[in-house]
Length: 126
Image (cartoon, rainbow, N blue to C red; front, side, top):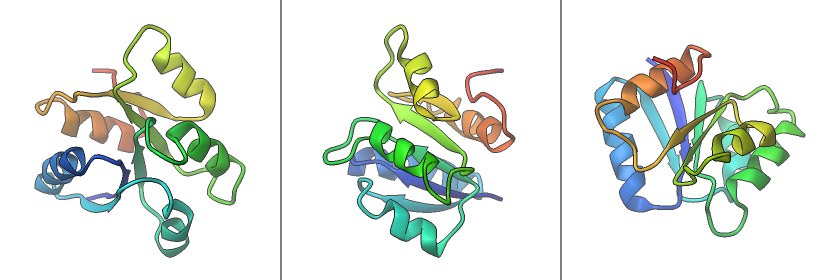
């Protein structure tokens, strides 16, 4: 299956995402926050990055901006966020994310949303 990097500051969310995706056969690497993102990307090339937007220190918007200005600019990054108000998805896409999944996630739909993201499609389609 796929190699997925999850950047999420909540240990509980990380555990849930890791469990759901591991059950589907994916190899998961988790970072509790974005401080080690570029160090991790220097060591591995994930098929997909799922990134929280609201994190202490550098938030997801800052990290995706830095990613798009780096040698990792082609990396597929999906916003995984509790920002689910009108316009938040558009803001995330304009900031450089390739897709958007809102939290709290629907545990029945989440693995399929990730599968669509891995296929280069909008995670919310379907």
